[in-house]
Length: 317
Image (cartoon, rainbow, N blue to C red; front, side, top):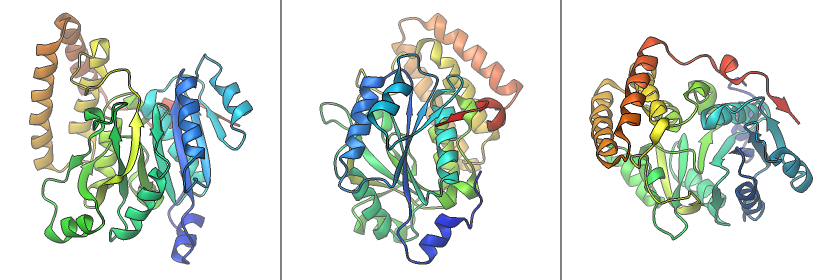
């Protein structure tokens, strides 16, 4: 991992604009990836560099990126490491490439033309600057997407709330990886996402860790469309994937430094309510019960592996 005090930090200290690197994680969704990369190209403020992390796709994604998006740096992982592994690898490479700011998003995220410009404007206007600025995420019909609604900061101080409001923003405690701009210096200090989470709760763990004791804001003026198949949150029947929800929540509550003790109680209660709703709505509760038991056992038995072990040896091209 790049160290603090590197070229990006020195450039910003000298008054130069920070280098913005966009990181897009993809797996077997080449058509959606084309939409995402085309929208990034069309930004009113184009990123200084773009990295695509390919999670060992089998649909020709790597060749498509090389053929149609020559300006993009392709990071090909040897196996599918999930969103968690993809963002850990991509963010780590962005730091190595001298990023001052990193714009993170999934391959099914389509930013409106002014999305990045609005994030940068909010960053400039909110004192700090904030460690993280998140976009407003909508579904294909324009409704706010419940899967990606940042958690408001419960006890934001008056000065922090007023400063955010003056910039047209809202203080938040966590955010999703669907269009979030993070400070490279904060990542160098607090660490990368935990790759072994694979999927679910990786963004919650990373952003709460990044924001503990720091300022983060939601910028409603930055809008992206999250093109999921259906409109809903993670309490929609998850099937076998419930294992990851349970295991990763156990890891988060017992091993992550992201949450203060009082927050663990608060979010623990919220998790229990969400799981109850998930069971009530499920069409196959036996699958969820197996996922619950397996997830509890795996989460309590051992913690996540170090990122180097979980990621393997990526191929950078």
